[in-house]
Amino acid sequence: MKKPIYLDNHATTPVDPRVLEAMLPYFTEKFGNAASRNHSYGWEAEQAVERAREQIAELIGASPKEIVFTSGATESDNLAIKGVAEMYAERGDHIITVTTEHKAVLDACKHLQKQGRRVTYLPVNRDGLIDLDELRRAITERTILISVMWANNEIGVLQPIREIGRIARERGVLFHTDATQAVGKVPVNVEQDNVDLMSLSAHKMYGPKGVGALYVRRKNPRVQLAPQMDGGGHERGMRSGTLNVPGIVGFGEACAICRREMAEEGLRLAALRDRLKDRLLAELDEVYVNGSLEHRLPNNLNMSFAYVEGESLMMAMKDVAVSSGSACTSATLEPSYVLKALGVGDDLAHTSIRFGLGRFNTAEEIDYVAGQVIEAVRRLRELSPLYEMAKEGVVLKKVKWPQQ
Amino acid sequence: MYSEKVLDHYTNPRNVGSLDKSDPSVGTGMVGAPECGDVMKLQIKVDEDQGVIVDAKFKTFGCGSAIASSSLATEWLKGRTIDQALEIRNTDIVSELSLPPVKVHCSVLAEDAIKAAIEDYKRKRAARQDGGR
Image 1 (tube, rainbow over the protein chains, first blue to last red):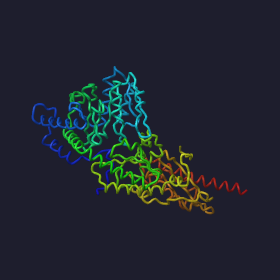
Image 2 (image 1 turned 45 degrees about the horizontal axis):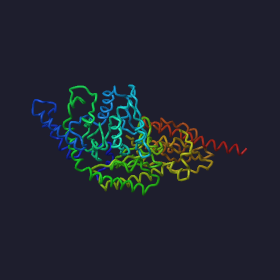
Image 3 (image 1 turned 30 degrees about the horizontal axis):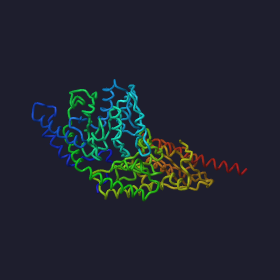
Image 4 (image 1 turned 90 degrees about the horizontal axis):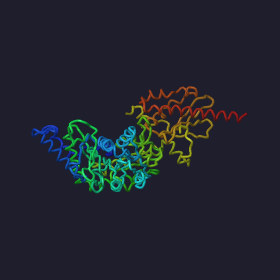
């Protein structure tokens, strides 16, 4: 077993060796610029890019021409949101999104608010899901875009994308989804799911970092975007800049592998995830799963371990690489805004750990991790004044804390 | 990310535990809040005749640096008089543990916990003396 055991696959994934193999020739022998039209180096690169475009399109049920390459999902989110706001400024100035979105979406929306656009941030319920009636009510004559992520990066909760897309279509509003965590993990089909714009990232699906894509619907309706990067007019004018050919080749290969293996991999990872969850719930008291278990990525588990602060818990599990909803290292000291949006109290948000399972995790690793977590939680609870108080019967919610 | 000394205190925390809150020679300080991600309970036991802290215990809910700061504080408290204990500054803890700027608040909390424990002890003693009259 290689240690630390990597269970942070929502942050990034390792490049699959098959992906790397596909990429390698494009660094050295086949190094051409895909925009070079006058020699075979350029043609070769262009051909590779077009093949990757097909592989990506196939995975999401799109046409290759609808794929715009970017540097990653953050850029795709920015291009979709700002590009629509600018292009459709005459039609309206209102955007609807959700409080639990990734910062790339939230901050792009905030940027537009500063410029005078209006943004509605829909709340989520205890499970992390939006209320479709609330979405319907939020749509006005001036609404031009709905942006709702497919799968949440912290809690793995899957929003009802198909229904949201249907509502958007009925009301003539464009629908963007940040599907960074979903593509390659769960079935995604832009036609069946009524998606107009979709952000993707290679490095969350065993491809390389620094490459992503924006799916932009070409018909029914034809979506137009104001480019956010000016230059040579690459990617049908929507995103200028020389294409990252090796990265794109890797992205394509990563998609092809996901298409073949996703169904089986999803079942395997869900079983491993449940094995971890069930053991932690069985052996520890006052442990809570955050977010819906039903509408969830197969590889995500987010749990709060009451009375044990998340960062110290990660420190105790030194052979395990995970991340925490506690923000003890951030300057603001604010715990996860996603968990807060679910109504998880700050006290429990500080005790949360995100486990992100991936293609290369084994049952042996999961059992080892479960053991480490259990041992660490028990040790830290011995150190926790809160656990001691709770065991004495003190109701912590009723305590008047000096620094509140 | 963590200094050797933080790791040492975190891995082998000194003086973990609880003293009897109702003991008149024990002062208890509880600072922080669960919502802020840090709660420290620090207790001192004072030898009344000598005015010296003979024992100190802590329990902390918080990050590794918070645990290390309170562990270090209990080490430093033992053997000090009340006045000497009040001289401990958060900046001493910062430099001893090489805490980075984002972790300075952990040391502040430890200083607050020391002061709260001493206040509690003094309050108890004053109450007793009043009662004795």
